[in-house]
Amino acid sequence: MSSPNFRTLDLNLLRVFDQVMAERNLTRAARNLSMTQPAVSNALARLRDFLDDRLVVRSGYGVEPTPRALALWPAVSEALRQLEASIAPGSFAAAEASNTFVLAMADATAAELMPGLVEIIEREAPGISVRVLPLTTRDPRRLLDEGQIDLAVGYFPAVLADLTAQAQAGVAAVFDHQRLYDGRYVCVMRDAHPLAAAELTLDAFCAAHHLLVSFSGRPFGFIDEALASLNRKRRIVLTVNQFFTAGRVVSGSDLLTVLPHHFVRVTGMASELTWRELPFPVPAVHVDALWHRRVGTRGDHRWLRGAVSDAAARAFAAQGDMPAAGAAAESAP
Image (cartoon, rainbow, N blue to C red):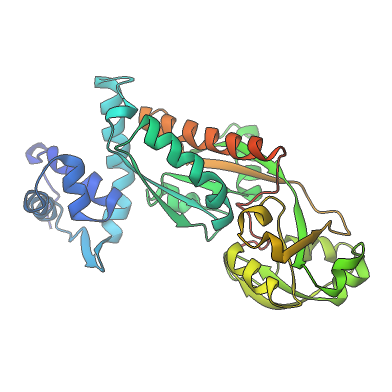
């Protein structure tokens, strides 16, 4: 099969491809491009013929990309953004923008950040939309590299260690990060739990039955790592992937769980829960925003990062402390 002749390619097709990949939906892509959906479909069909690949296939209410499309999109997206930045540097106007951003974070993080972010959007950028996906890994670099998300917010210790090592070795990293907040975890139980009447001891903690919050489903988390360093372990009865689920289950059982300190206040179950300090040391938890460098200089992405940072600062300043990291579940993927 002969290679495509780039000189015959209509570059407008790449703009359509970029939006379809970003939205995974032809109707939303058409809206962003101020085109009709048939026109978007026609452009996509022309690009399919040129590349001899289906590019996307229908899936539910949208489309899913083929492996060729996933491999092609990062280069196309970066080229378009660089061209845009060169032709119209600093041209992003939040008040006139109609971007859709995709963020990945835990439910506890979203509960804290989204109210403030929505307030910022409604005030500064009423045409912008945000989609929040559940964070299912401590290493979201593949999702960022493939363009499935614009920004990940969470606890990524291994990623940051790797980026630091790359910088020390003189390797140009392709990801950047920004610290949003620090904090601590606490042991949470129902208000009338037998252990709620006194200070929690290490023996009592290890003897109890536990619920683990794990985004990946792995039944071993950083709490278990800390216990293992003391030659201790606990009995995990249930593993779930959401903090809200953990709070609801614990409020009606004798299970213990470990949650971000700040999250207890936003569960809607604060009157049913109580917390105790963990009876052993655990590593500090840092929550960062992580993004791909190909979008780092874009005006729209700079605005997004600033808005997320402002929302975090407002949420925790209003509470009067720097709470535990709501973006991190206990277990590593």
